[in-house]
Length: 116
Image (cartoon, rainbow, N blue to C red):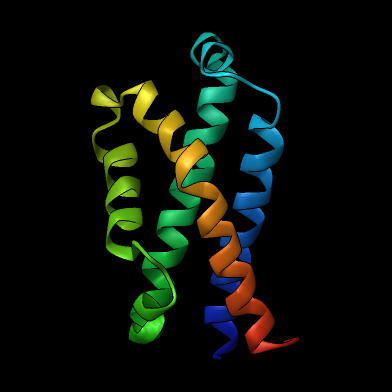
């Protein structure tokens, strides 16, 4: 794996870790009521989408390792460009339903690549 691709994937892993820390033990009600939490979650998802977009430009085979790579990048685009229409329930749903799988997939790919 190219070193810059590994760096982008490490950024994704770190963002997944932070998202887990930010949201662990929280409910949707907590999320909706906390502007700082929402901003932090949206920021980390933006990082994930950007990092995967850049990594996939350098290694087009990455889509084989991620269940929903185009959707992840599309979610990033929505957060950045459609910020006025972001639905909190949608974002929270991604946290609950999609984040664990993404974290698992990026960790497996990094482990497969081995140490830098």
